Image (tube, rainbow, N blue to C red; front, side, top):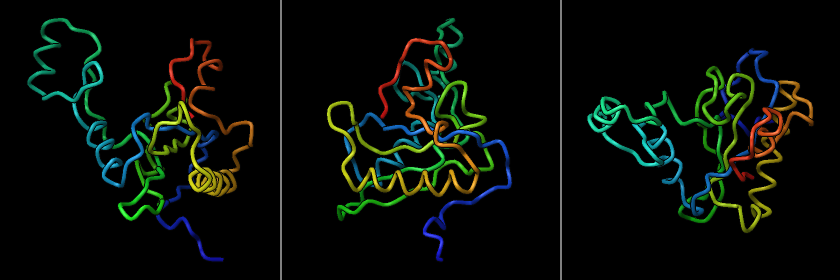
Length: 169
């Protein structure tokens, strides 16, 4: 059987015990959106905006809290995006050899998958959902992740005894 998920670089790591599904909380965009998310995650950030390193250092010098340093890569391990031709494809994010940057308290043990789009008002369409299910099935089989460890991001908050701060998915 041909591996449909050739974009995934599997590791022998036993660290992966969970899969967490996200949405980008942005309008559904094309592949360019994945690159924008990556660029945002790899930039200095303050109050949800990308800022220059000079601005960040200035805010830090002023004692401002909440300045975020650039990450090594996009926070998710994989994503689902729409191409300019309207087809949906998988995108590789952060390599599975690295911890994620997607869910507080779970980054060292959870594979993060992001569907590009905002699903607060409407759920992912059938194509997106089937692609997520197929990818989750592949990853959970490979890493022996039980179904009760496959969560939406918002479901992680109660496990950490924190108020829910995200809606995905």
